[in-house]
Amino acid sequence: MAVKINFNAEAAKTHTALIQNERAMGKSLLRLSTGYKILNAADDSAGLFIADMLGTVAAALDQGNANIQTGISALQIAESSAGQIYTKLQEIYVRAQRAANDINDPNARAALQQEINNFIDAIQKIGTDTEYNGIKLLDGTFTEKYIHYGPRADQVVSVSISNLKASNIGAYVVQGTGKVKSDTTAYTSLITGNWQYNSSTDTVTVAGVNLNSSIYLSYTGAVDAKAIADAINNNATLQQVGISARATNISIASTEWSNIQSTTGSVTMRFYVGKSTNSADAIEITVAQGETLTLDQLISQINTQASAKGLNITASSSGNKLVLQTTGETIGVEVIRSDTNAASVDLGMLLQGATASASGSSTTASAVKVGNLTIAGTDSYNYNFTGISATNEGLGVANIGNGSFYNLYSIDVTTNSGAELAMDIVNTAIKKVDKVRAQIGAVMNNLQSIFDSQKVAYDNTKEAESVIRNTDYAKEMAEFVTYQIRMQATVAMLAQANTLPQLVLQLMR
Image 1 (spheres, rainbow, N blue to C red):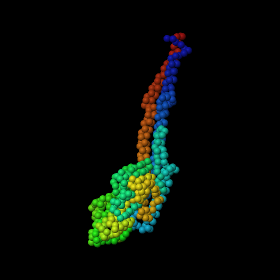
Image 2: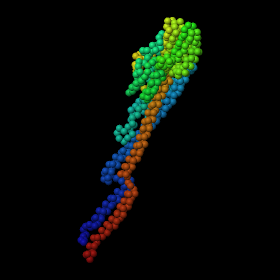
Image 3: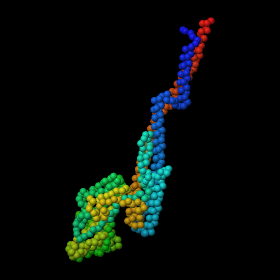
């Protein structure tokens, strides 16, 4: 071999290996001390890019969940306050129900009205003052608010909470006061025209926002508020948007009772209930020649036949007047005298508001009283009753119209009718508040589901980033020990390489 003293190739190569081992050991030492596998872009440029993207997504997921928690906190405040409003509405409803009892004197009703006013004032304050960090929640301004939950743009949940102030909750109401018609004619003739459905395809339309629901009433007969109310209440679409109806019909005879005595001929009275015009379905009471019919006897016969025929009508007396009551069904009366000499009958004794009488040359007279119809909805709606008749004379409302809004401040329980209307208003307001609470709860559940899902996504994303970015200590420690051994071996071999030029001295001896 050639022996030189000016350049020690073995020592130079060993030194190069020493430098490389030193660099590798130093990097391994940094990885162990920092916990990061990638110390700079030169270590793993592709891995650094992927890890940084995963880290950004993980941070965004974490912030998104923080946004969700903030949103849920605000919604919890809103739902809790809405629950307080519900409780106060319930108290108002009970007091309105109490005020509807005519046993209350004016002072008692005035006291109940004052209590209700206090509750209304509390509801107004809750609706106005409920907030989260200065953001009003129940005053109608919290609409189309976005909770950004995701790591990407437009990953949001839209939240809107309706106005729950006392001035903005209540009911959109249509009130029809049933009309009375009487004439010296048969009952079937009396109810023709505006008092009769035109055909079996007649409809009642009640339309809400983006809603058009036609209610089909497939029969002919007297206009009947109860039938319309039932059709509305049985319509699933209208139920979903908070529209309901009720019907009532109470007749207190206009004229005090006078016993019917038929000295010549006979008198037959028929009481019709609901839509039917069939005399076979009616309650029929005959006063034969020589008989006398008292008010108590009339009441007894009406109630007995109503029970037997399954007719929803009850008879009673108020003072010396006949009282007839249904749950909204139309009440019809027909009097037929056997001849002009039979006893005369003033229909005012039988039905409130009736002015005709079967007397003199009139052997037949009839009267009809339609029930009162009340429709209430949580939101604005319109109605169209032209399918029933052109003018709706019987229902006592225009054939086309809109629900009129009655807020809580409209409540007046100082009269029976006002208290009954108050119950409709409050009941509808309760439905709206419950609907808002349900919507808030649904959003909270949705956000909680997203939170849970994103927490799993965050954990997995951080794990994926960790695989790329962070040091595997078991593996790195093994490599560090290897580098240490190689460094020691390289230093030892460098010492041996440095002794090689000494061989020249042996040649020179």
